[in-house]
Length: 301
Image (cartoon, rainbow, N blue to C red; front, side, top):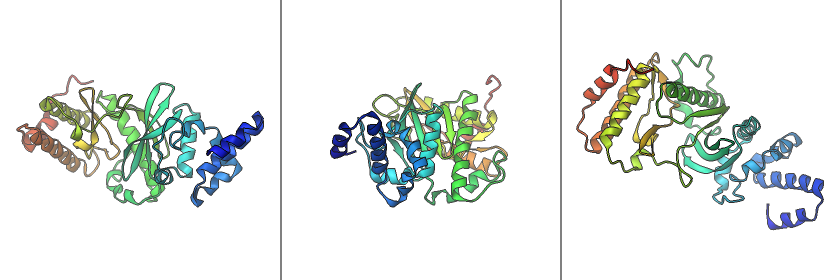
């Protein structure tokens, strides 16, 4: 809302002010033809209810990061409707600013009644998901698959949510999943009040051997107890927070019965070994893979 809009609103009574503010909000969102649907009454009424929660991604209030290209790329009609659903369910209060950007998704800092959250919004209008089927086909948890892009995205998000639940059940360090709706996943925020936790590849680690041992234990527990393999376990998909490694981006994780699970497991261990070697740890792939497969986890419950 620009200064002229604010000046006009100041002169209105309460009821007129509310109506004019709603129209100004929709006008502000409607920067391109792709957002013309927001002028429809059913949608304008819906989004007037969550206007305050979207101030951050609109670049208003205390947040000034706004990039209209990001907004246009991420916040299509169905995404905004998903955010509306999560807000009205009480899982999300505000959406503030991006903390990670990728081809498949943007992750935003948000808030809820229980504190800060990370909100992962998967893109619905690009073609980067063309390789997803190799991680989804063969997973009996997701039958009756559609190859339509939007449906694939929704399946992928549910898959990440369920993988997080499965790993957390065994006490493994992953962000706590909070809620999911369509292409939006709300989960625990990993970071401090100033910034999100860095990725392991960017962090200075004083005892890399201890970190490597934990990641091998993580992989072994995921494989032997959770019957799951991450599928892309590299220093890019691990956060370094309060002196501990936290594994993220588990959407591509597959269960053991998946026809490519062993191939993905070897690839994960190979990437961990590469990180270990780069950090001065003398370990071979065969040794690390043996530890993952044969580690005694009888006391894990």
